[in-house]
Length: 161
Image 1 (tube, helix red, strand yellow):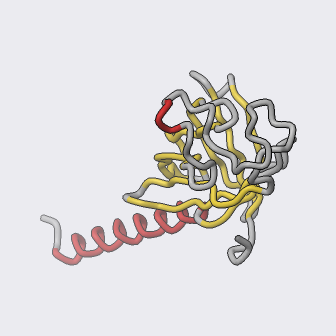
Image 2: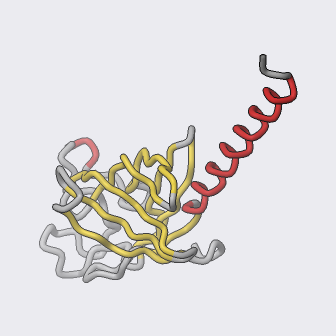
Image 3: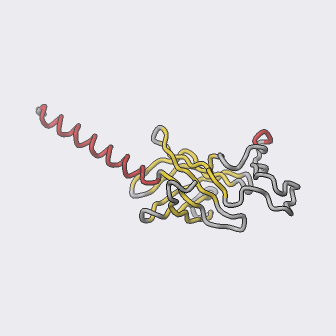
């Protein structure tokens, strides 16, 4: 027969372990800079809702199209013009949910999420790994993780928006 004390201790340890895992998963929260590319870089805000992690573009280093834009949008704010859904092609890039539905799986890793690439309008499977406190390894892929691309994001200062 199990004592009441043993049951209470088991419940308390389970709650403590669950809270510790949740806090560890929340290490990804906050602002991150993507790697600079030929079109500049973005600042992403990672948030959590219902135990899932998402990331939105909140700032672009180059928010407007260059004067010589092939799409005739020179000097205008960047929009999601490559989106396969025509009704979304006019939405601003700033505000787009870039990361969606990640689950924390332990050991500084978030999996089973997706990443959207506004440059080509495609969504890919994605895994994220925290490397130290200041670096995220973000891997987008098709099918299996071997067929993909990895980018490194750096933590941004909270007040820099």
